[in-house]
Length: 325
Image (cartoon, rainbow, N blue to C red; front, top):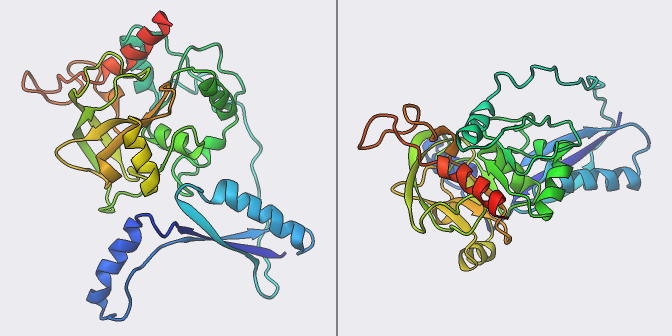
């Protein structure tokens, strides 16, 4: 069975924290002549049929649309493997329907609870559906999604329901992406930039102070401009990255919605914690506002332990925006 090799590298002008970490360790191995390490990915695609130009073209399309994120990565090579390579056939499981109680205990229950506490009615949507069930807003919750080992949110951004989410975003529906949901929105190109591994290489879990930089979005209307809030943060690939030109545009046009304070937990450029699209209806952020909506379960404050509810206004803002629309 013939094999096509696809090689992907981070864009040369963008930060590569994994490569930087490896480069920093080179001297400890006695290797003095190497520097400037960059880490990429190699894919081996086994296929049926002739090893011809049409196979390469199809592989190139796959490389551009799934195996790489064009915002932060370059496809540097698509070529046939040398010689004859035989790969074991892959068995693909048949898709199954979601059981009736599939949403009883999944992590997005925290987002549903936040909506309920804000005065809304949460509706669970299945990723394999082609209907938004007449909802008025969509939240892509945090957690982990299938295929995050490729790039966080990359495969999830191709779920069937994302076609409806994309159409709804274009029509002005409020869309919020939290953590993994933020990654999905960047992979679907509904928000600019991309998210990469934390620059220190470790998972971050902390109560994070952030500043509200933009109160004109559907999700921040009830905050005061410049408000400093505390909401939990939990991520391993939360570093926001974009080209220098894109960062300048986001800052200049006021599309940065949240900014980290005190400490940058993941190496995000310009301490960016969340951004919006130009219209202001689509917002993504890495910290978790849904974990700061109920006294007794949120971050510590000067008033009492676990009394922080700074995230609740995000969900209340969207409900108010819908009511006043």
